[in-house]
Length: 476
Image 1 (cartoon, rainbow, N blue to C red):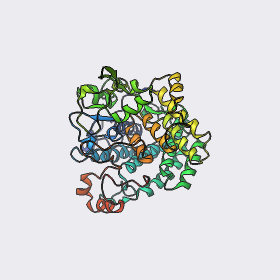
Image 2 (tube, rainbow, N blue to C red):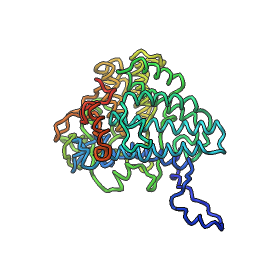
Image 3 (tube, rainbow, N blue to C red):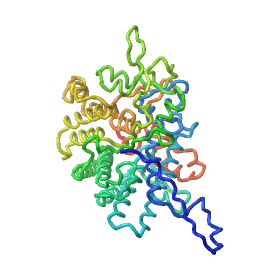
Image 4 (cartoon, rainbow, N blue to C red):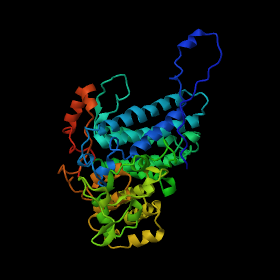
């Protein structure tokens, strides 16, 4: 589908009137905004945040070590504070995305013109996107303000991250039960154009993702969640992907185009961490993910820079032409990821249909096809001894973790999360900082100045507000 221009704030219609109290109305800040506008704005906020490569906003591609930097390598060495990167993530999700979704639900609830079924669908769709946002916050920070986050208390307490996940799972179940048919969101739904059945597939796929996150700490619940998600219906093809197609002109382009093209900057090169294993396996996505071969001892090859170092831009390969297309889709969950999640579930003995090898192959194939490769490319790649599930190196976690991480190129947050879940692939330490890949963001400085007691208590509860502290599901 095509992304429509972000729905603008509804204009107030003023009528001639003798009531002078109307002069006290602030017409630039309307008291009532259509729910669809708020929902659309929240969707774009989330998608832009997860898609951006702006180092002031999103460093997940760097932390997944799929890109390296050139002149400035601070973010590749896990510097968060100087640019307030952790604060940007916190504010974007709390103050913008979730705030808009909560307000949208309030207006939906109050709308007397909506049928009960339509109202239930719209509320459920907003709820699913809110659950997604909170799940990302937990996965980034660990313990977060949740139960008191949008109440009257300006210094909300932090909730235990595992407890938040449990509540999110319950909320997701309730939303899934209400989804189906047409939500009548129409153009305000920039992802599925009001198709509540499609949202149900996304919700179940998110549920499956969260189930696998829980698998090492709460296996019984993870099994129940995964099996019920699959029974209810997850994403089953690339046509179901939760994706937004951007437009050709600002401000509605993919943020990557702004970062890589419009900016005129040369900040990023491919990282050797991903280039080298892809070359070793003759991966057909190599020239789809990247561009610009360089001379290596008389042979033109793709070459990745050293992660965490100041790499010379022209000496290495760069993010590919596809990523520099302003209309390149932003994707939160796709069929490839779901297939790898099902492979994991199968290895754990969950009843999700099929077997791990089939789901693994589906994940690789879906990624190759999504990026523009052919079925023949996928078949040839999967036939290799180093790729085929039966013969690839390592145990099932290494096989799934490595190929899923490659397939999650351009989806930095989930690639980083996959590394944390499986500890594969093995990521080298950052060249300058000489420290391993962090397992969380530290809390923003603003929390220490505005909500000091609560954040100090949270830091103590999680074992220290440090980059190496792990969120609850990261136990390997």
